[in-house]
Image 1 (tube, rainbow, N blue to C red):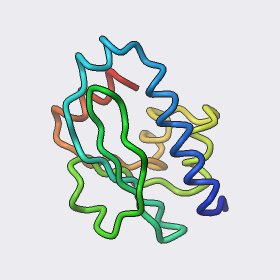
Image 2: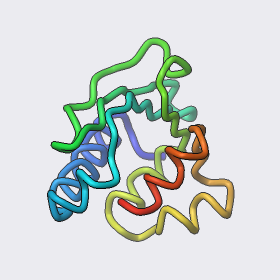
Image 3: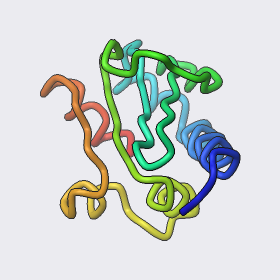
Image 4: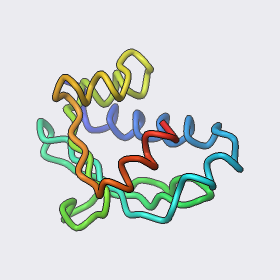
Length: 113
């Protein structure tokens, strides 16, 4: 099981990867949303804001259910996603990544990821 520090680093790597996406293409598909990432095996959650400029830094989140887009992923799977050893679509299909969002937001996220 990955620890909290490894998960925070993984979230940073994911944010950095999103920053590498073509800015015009990213802005075309992204609208401002709050995003939470809950890591149940560690009992922690983080929040960020997704916007046309990318992601704000992740901060601890006391109420992850309040975010507009909610991700739930185990610590080891979060690190594997960040290291590109696990593809988001495969993780989702296998139940290792849960995404709660509006249908429109899901379609937008799919185009960015």
